[in-house]
Amino acid sequence: MDRKGLQQAVDRIVAIIQADPHKERIDKIITRWLKRHLQRLGTEVNLDQLNSLVEDKDMLAENLENWAQQERRAERQKVLQETEQRVREAEQRALESKCNAARKLIALTEMNDQLIAEIEELPVEEVEKLRAETRH
Image 1 (cartoon, helix red, strand yellow):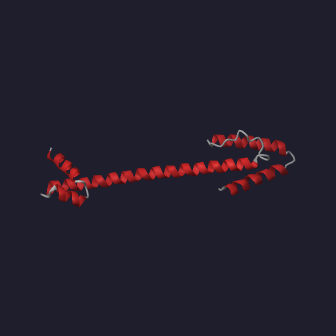
Image 2 (image 1 turned 180 degrees about the horizontal axis):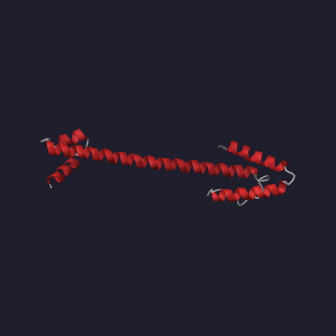
Image 3 (image 1 turned 90 degrees about the horizontal axis):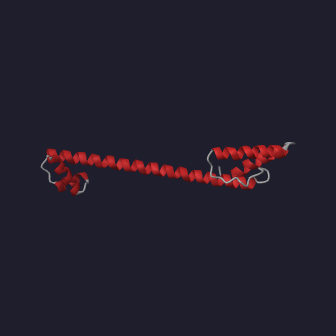
């Protein structure tokens, strides 16, 4: 939900409160509940100045929008980190596969290290290391 949508939602709540004959009491109860609820959610919204939903509706909507933006940024960061981890794992699996294929070529053929390196797209040093490992 964007800032406009949040503002509209807060405005609707305020309109409902204002239509009630006990609006001051309702305002205090809903404001207190909202502050506690947002704290329980772990929001980093500073609502210390929020004393009345009716009087501070613009500030509330702005703080909620800031929180929503923080949540979106955090979610994007999480997705990016997970993607980077998957890429690293896929690269590691691909390297292991190339190394396994190179080991087979070393064991089964008379190919030189340079040719095996070219075929498996590995550094020659890696193939030389694999050949040394197979000799032991």
